[in-house]
Length: 259
Image 1 (tube, rainbow, N blue to C red):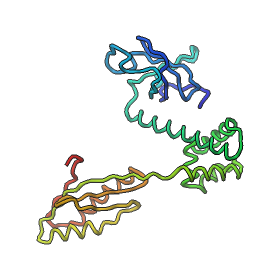
Image 2: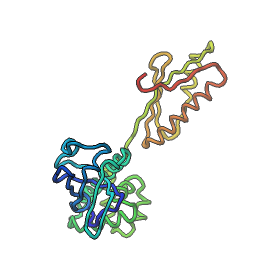
Image 3: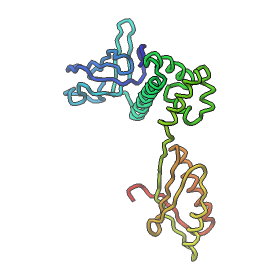
Image 4: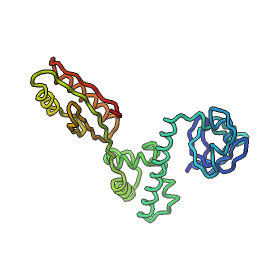
């Protein structure tokens, strides 16, 4: 939790505290419950007849600071100027930050350290090195040697404890994507050609399976530790199928999800 205040344009997590016809007073969860105000005109792009239909007391929201007046200590929020992608990003960052705080609490308990003092000291060290506490824990779990180099000022006993906690609690997540293909070959040995091409596919750095759904539909499933990598490899596989089919008469179509 920060003792400073957010900057204009920053995304924040806020809790609705008190609602009035003209707007709602909120507390900023990440800034010591500092007070902010959400005007009714900043809740939705259209005119609002009843503010209670849009926000509730106790509700947590992802908002953006669109005006900050330091002299008055005034923070004005907006909901309508937050895009869906910004909302998804902030929700994930908030989850990661809370998870990082929890892991530091576990470490403080294991080392028999004062939780508040230990968390403050390690938050600075880990944030300076990796941008956030959770990023540092991820590095300790997935790239230990490099993480140790960047956290070389941390005592060995503490570093070893952080490393153990990271590896016990943070695992690489696997993502799965799939596509149904309509693949037809109009040569006399068309079925064999398709079978040979699909059987020869060798994806790079991902796991892949091809399932026969029913002529002429096939399902390609990709599993990877990264969504973009999986998508890239799937596109590569589609190109490999086209090259494998060569100059024979064939037709390939990637089917939409509802087909």
